[in-house]
Image (cartoon, rainbow over all chains, first blue to last red; front, side):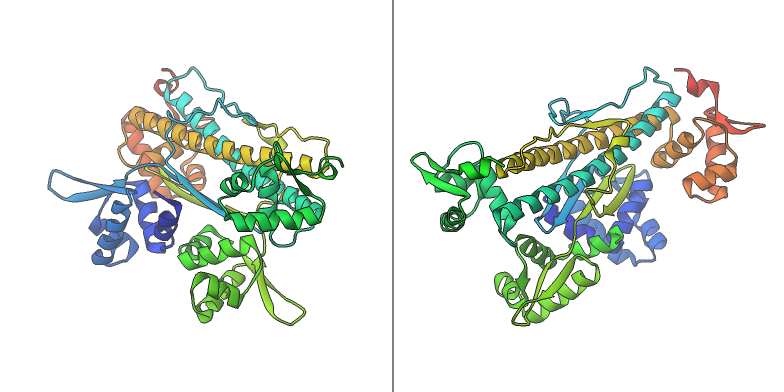
Length: 222
Length: 222
């Protein structure tokens, strides 16, 4: 599901309370209604939305009563900074994610060869600690990104629009490119890209050659 | 700010559009209103909420017109699974976060000694790649956590309530504890803890000794 739909769903406090309750144990509508102090009708409407989005599923017990549970893992990340607003959601799947291809990151959870309950509990503890460390690292990266973007912004002399400038310059860092190619990279109209390039050419940051637009020598030497 | 307040704010599509616009460039109310096709009155109301929450700030230009910009970095993470619903928000601060203390995680962004624009753009690229790798790693960890919790749940024979059982068992994994100490660890009422312990004692998973509640030998040998 896309992150906008997920944010719309999670923007409602009672839906969050329903999800929190169901993540502790599967429940009937009447249980949810009593626990939250919300009418069954309202609970059913929230559950319908959550079910449609695939966050919640229902089963029927022996007495043919319907009870609800969390359908699957969902993860949402939102980053807001003066340089961008990004949200992404994903379904974590333990077996499908390949973390061995990471170039800047290595993990060591130190799996024990102990399948007894005690070994599983140790593994749980280490995974929870790793989870916190990853959150910490992501905050660190966000801070670093802003610092680098501040420096780029200062170096280029762009106020406000600096993220667009940074993305544009990053696009031609390795090789000269045509306006069309840059426009595709940035998912921005050709006219906008052409105008930004002109502005930066005036400041001596980029230049147009036969091979396309590239960084000037001045930009590549400190 | 707490993550519930942040989710309430981000649950509105027009507020998200305003944040996205301001993260590209600072804007006046009229600009926002025209760009989004939303009345200035509604825009002002959204901005007021965003300003109160500290996400947005305003300045006054030479013509004494007020314009708005993103105030600071904010990061939000939400995890939903059959084992829990957790959301946390934080303000990433590049200089305050210490990632060298991580035990399960190491990062290598490979900083260049190149302060020229080109070096900064390279650094930007590597940080963006690291950011993606960290997201991938977090999805992996979420998947692993669910697998371990599934195994614990199977091993303990708890249906539904298994997260509570796992947390309780993890609390006494290293050393025997009293009901009060476990109750404090789990932030759960003593009666609930006592009842869970009884249920697990019946299944031979924990036992009560003079030193407190502990895992039985059976749980520590595969």
